[in-house]
Image (cartoon, rainbow, N blue to C red; front, side):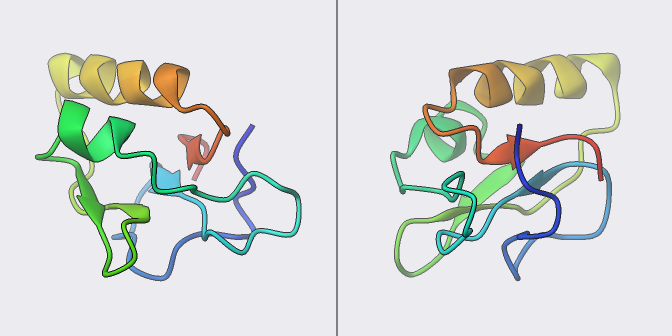
Length: 82
């Protein structure tokens, strides 16, 4: 599970977030590009390729798409528990 105490500084406010690559729990983003290529309307990448939430999902379809990215994340750096 993503560490909600280590959120990426570029996440917009809301329940969904990505963790900072320097997360001490070892669940930081590794810039694998899965989420921001799979759901580019919701996930962005910073100058180092690390993911952050640029738009919170609103509809059930949006949540489903973001959940797919959460499930596919190889290091559990996406969270939805705000």
